[in-house]
Image (cartoon, rainbow, N blue to C red):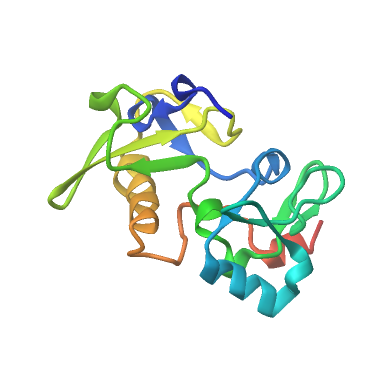
Length: 170
């Protein structure tokens, strides 16, 4: 489990773009909710999921990576792209109601009448640290927030810009 100090407030990040390195799919277990579990079971079978004492997960391959990760060292593809679990849609960001990882002034993001706190896992290779660009602050972070709040499901900025058609060319 990561130390609480390991998460970085969004205001320390200049930009983020998924580079399809597969790091998140190789080193993190994906917790899924019951609705996501049902979709996976219906489309791929129960054998592609796992359960813990009080959580449901996507099964992992023998090498530890997600069962739905395809590709290789340079280019990776999630075969759940059209029904990607919320945990995967949000990674490497966490959107919280309280500043659980410190630095409240740097993590706060006013959204409507609410104050949310947005952090990122610095181990993500797609992060570029520095002063947030206008695009990152106004579009990318807001899209992560809308996904976390359940206001959006379609990803534009918060996923790789390499499409399935591009993947087949490699």
